[in-house]
Length: 279
Ligand SMILES: C[S@@+](CC[C@H](N)C(=O)[O-])C[C@H]1O[C@@H](n2cnc3c(N)ncnc32)[C@H](O)[C@@H]1O
Image (cartoon, rainbow, N blue to C red; front, side, top):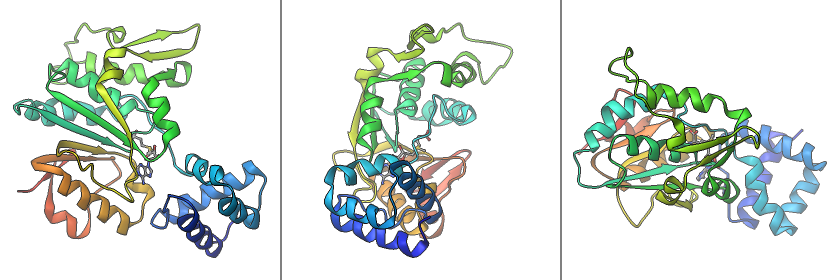
């Protein structure tokens, strides 16, 4: 088992020998992930240090074991219903809508956004960028190919957000999910349609180094279930980056267990399930 003191040494070595800096990640989560990595690779602390120092490929791949990539289509359906009835409804009045899904993992959140925009008639005026630190999950995101049997929740979430009418639960919209993805039960796959895959620009971005995408400004940034793995100092830096990267009166969506604290809290106002940039 890695001690807290050993973890600090590992983090220093990572900073020195790889392109990553995990110093401001939450300690508890890092300890769990490194301990698991050491068990899986059958290595102890000294071997871990040597591998990071001498094996570039190990250092690069390590990020895949350390980051938590859990995600799903229309995760927390109530949030998507809120986006539909409030945020996107209001953004629909703008000429263009720029959206950044930051920490997109294997892409389900970006596809959920694309589907919702299409359903609301806002697809053509929107641009969707989706980023993650982990290049392996991004490759999977670009394919938009998921397991069917492990992901049956996707269908009930889709129905809650897209088929149900949130303003009148007695009414349902006659929309089949095959409009957006094919399910092949024999092959155990869910495949997102090409028009959705082509719509989303997937890019590698490390929020520690760059909490902004420099080439544009956004109407909506969604960064859900990412900050919980970071300490307060890093969360503050990232939220400040998002603030700078948002247009005035634009939106920041965080995970249901995440919030804006400290100096940044004056820069945003929470309205329902989302933060609105002040000024
Ligand atoms: C739990 S997933 C969240 C996925 C999705 N946003 C959701 O809520 O379902 C967290 C993602 O954040 C990414 N991540 C962690 N640290 C990051 C960093 N420094 N920069 C960019 N992405 C990061 C991880 O690779 C992982 O894919």
